[in-house]
Amino acid sequence: MKIILLYASDFMGNASVLPPENDSLAMLNSENSVEELIQQPILHGIDDHLIEFAEALRTVAKALRQAAEGKASSQAEASEWKRKYELERSRNLQLEKRAMPSEKHLDENWRVASDGAVEKSDKCCGEHGICSHQVLRDGEHGHDATVVPNKMIRKASFKLSWCCNGDKSNQKKHDIVSFEKGNITTAERSSKQISLKWESPPQTVLILTKPNSTAVRMLCSEMVRWLKEKKSLNIFVEPRVRTELLTESSYYQFVQTWENVKEILFLHTKVDVVVTLGGDGTVLWAASMFKGPVPPIVPFSLGSLGFMTPFYSERYKEYLDSILRGPISITLRHRLQCHVIRDLAISDLDSEEPILVLNEVTIDRGISSFLTNLECYCDSSFVTRVQGDGLILSTTSGSTAYSLAAGGSMVHPQVPGILFTPICPHSLSFRPLILPEHVTIRVQVPFNSRDHAWASFDGKDRKKLAPGDALVCSMATWPVPTACQADSTSDFLRSIHEGLHWNLRKTQSFDGPRETHDQIEPFI
Image (cartoon, rainbow, N blue to C red):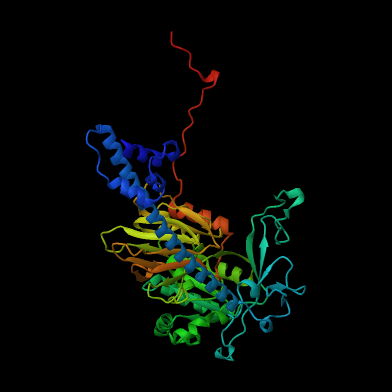
């Protein structure tokens, strides 16, 4: 009976209530004393309910010991993840400093402040606009200018400005934030459609086409001839397309192309406008060719389903004539920059070549029969553990693609965010998320995962992720500007109405009350 009383006093935290009979009572607060008391045999003659109570206390002691061990393990794991994210943050800071233009490369419209930030001087070309060297610069910092041929045609300059529907000045109505008396209020709001205005006429056009299509091949040859004869433009095409054009006629000798991958890296320094003939896949291919700045893309619809191709090929002369004159509305489509970090890497800075995606990066289980097991982190915060068929990290432009099929929401392409959408999760409460664009997402395959995972980037470049490998995604610096037929909002709504038949149903019939004079008199 004394042993049971000692258990009860230690478990309830009231050991001082029992009178001390010997020196062993002073050792009740130590784990060794508790273990010795648990190991003592139970005296004969004790009631059954006291025996059950003793067994319950043994179970509680064991659970507390396991909880302490789990807490120590979690703290060690948290410290390791904190160390890795500090390395990732320092790596991002180094990349930002490396991409920052030096003072000698800045023109008269920009200056370097005392804190190292690049600021706009009083001589900038527009008071309310975003200049070409701010969003879509002519050259990428760090490239050797001597690589570009001297006979390169000078690129057309342009200016981006924020405009509002119904505003004749086509200037941005700035959101004025007031901090009067500690209250934050927004004085003005506007639709902020982005307008591109050429400051010098475009001179070079790149045409990218969908392969293995007779209709696209015929339209391409007709468009090339029209742009050369009517607009006197320099035209670049893919090597495959140039071969097809020369096979058709020797007239297309003036068409230019590239010979190796190195020339593609500097293609943005030569091309003013990119024209795509195909569907959304052709736009994805065009975006993947540019690892840095991307020229404005004019996407013509020649595919089966398109959310990024608002222009109809039958009216290409009218559209191109208007776009080459300007100004035009554009949509800045954000891209994700993805790094694969292997478990054997010395640090997180030791990663593979970054991959840019316009739609989404997908992590799935491949052909494995086991559930995908993924640990997800947002900056330094743990998000969740994904157990299911996989995970989709999507841009808002890709919200109407794989993410939508997996249950994600449709988001306007100019909303800056990252969609976090599970694929068939093993939990009914696992709902999709939309995270802000400034975060860094890390997806880790844990060491206790039953099998590998597979990552695919815009449906290609599939890579295997072994236990211990990680995928790090953040918003890329350079967006993909696509021309709008009307504006970004109108094009987006038209695409979901025509492409998805969104909320299409018959109108409910009217069954309201009849007028008194229309009522039929009862038959007598």
